[in-house]
Length: 86
Image (cartoon, rainbow, N blue to C red):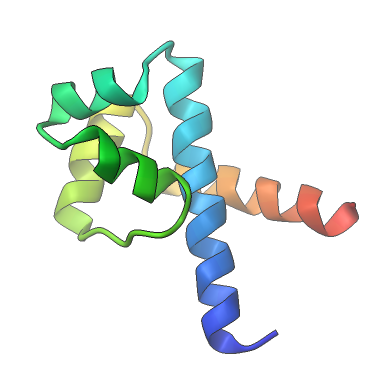
């Protein structure tokens, strides 16, 4: 896999981890977006891995989701492992 492909896949897995956490908390994309001052489309792009964000924005998201960046990274790694096992 090329480096760019690996980065894209990691971004996708991380976005899925964010979406999983959001759903676990019972939040819609719209509700999360309103809570943190983003638009819903930005949340959608983040969760589907087509959008990168700054660390500052990531801190805002993790605070709203009551999780650390490290915990999201662990969840993303678990998503990647499940995919590889399929």
